[in-house]
Image (tube, rainbow, N blue to C red; front, side, top):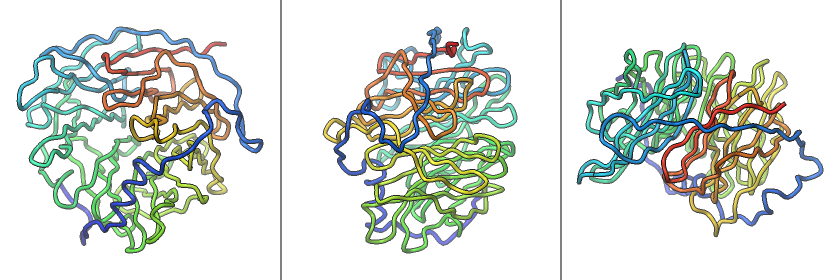
Length: 409
């Protein structure tokens, strides 16, 4: 393990307040999500998709309830990752990592997992990404003296998913805050997260070892700005990481933020359009033709920002976040994927999950899905990332499920 950057400082009360704002925000009062959009908001044509559920076999090993968390198209097929909640937990173990593979989205098989580290054997696999036809996976399980998430990365050794041994300070330690999703690009993989110095990332061209980048001048909060990253991705010729932040004394009104890097190690901040609403950028997608799509939230709704060769456009909004009194969990963007049916985004309103579609990032329409789980710790809805086919995974607390999709017409 290597580390880039130095000069770590601890979080201030403003930073802690910002964490609370960006993960739970303020209690909003919203119109229902099926209300008509404002007159100046772009609209999209309705999209109809036929979903066919496929069997997801139980992984070999100790039996239990499966959960699914993420999916991606990579190499010769599709990958789904998650975990098994053991039917017979012990005092020290109640979960184990799990993954599945399909060459055609119809017939699925369990992927062998050879986890040898203590926390790797207990990890819930939460995020998977593809680079050069290879996958890398990130998982975690809370535990230890303080109950913090203990993060483990995994790579595919032949046909077996193997965990990576890492020192405690790689993802934890006194400067730890959180570790987020992993994304892939032509040069490798990028994990986004945060340290006490501000935004941090982990980059590699080999999934067996990541370089931690923290307190890097282009990422580090400048003493006045308190910021958090939420996600990242490859954007044609550079990595882009997004999140939100606010200046000292303005922590109840965070703005969307972005950072860019050609190599994943040296970063530069990039200003995004902001409004007076609470805003937070969360997911990144390369649309091609030098266009980038970022989706997050703006005030009482979800928001989409597009960057093209003329720069960033003002955000358009769609959907609605549930009234705070109805929240079962924090509202957030769970996935963003380019598919044959256009770009699909799954979002949690704080009350339940929904699927939305757009052709260009400007006009959005809600898509019917076979399952809209309520927002809860074991529940999710994710549209798998892949240009050639449609895949949907969902979990309503009764076991992981998977559907292949076909756009009608």
